[in-house]
Length: 348
View 1 (cartoon, rainbow, N blue to C red):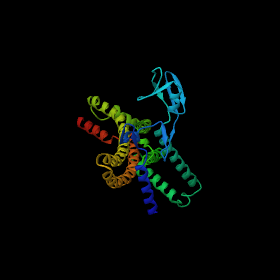
View 2 (view 1 turned 90 degrees about the vertical axis):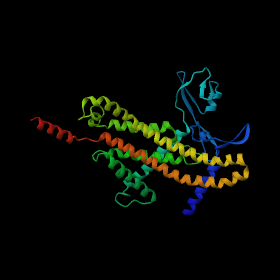
View 3 (view 1 turned 60 degrees about the vertical axis):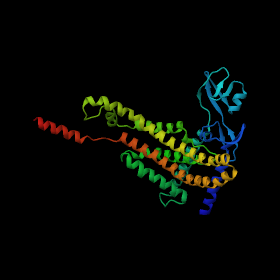
């Protein structure tokens, strides 16, 4: 098993080294390192051997909807031009709404579909009594149960009130698994990290935000706008701060996940790019000789990135549970009642 893992890791690193992230410049024989292109969202899906599968373009421009099987077909139709800013209509009308399928969207689908398949498979086994009437069977079901119990007991139950945590477990488990898969997909040499797209992470954060506010108790909203037990004049300061805090929390969720996954992918590609930079600057001998160090460093970073991918999924899920728990928790102001009683005693 260990030997197979080592071979798989070696193949993985070699694929990354020789992946089509490096292209020859038409005007210069020196190597060009397309770091940004490797993390950008594209209108094509890159296959393991470097082939590209171009994706449909669906958008609204000038009040009309358009559907093309690819960007190339849109240009060949004569209705659109491919500029640096993207597709624009020949009459100058910009695209007002773009619903096109992109590489990042494909990996978002992969993450959620894979989560659904695994959950459905596990549910069928539990319905047959495997894991309920008997012990879980097989490595995959044991791993599933460990992860599910961890999300339920150490995250949901820990930070959400005991009477309410169960209804949030499906969401927290789904978001953890989907983010973990999307993060891990980003480590594949030919794949894209969907969570390195701010639109993706912002959408996930908005879902958490909506769930948090919908399940907020009356007491939660009183602490946002009324602040029981504090002087009235202080509400002019506290209320705007607390109201702004409702939005800064999901904003932090989105930025944290986005920045960590984007920086990791850029760092790996940049370090491998040093092989070509050293070759251009000092010759092939130095470039090839230094490649051993850069590849070994990349391999170490890959293992670190696997850990980071899982940690970031955990952090997003944990903070989502914390925010939901804070909003759905009932607050008891016993100290306020005691203070009022003491004041009344003094007045008497």
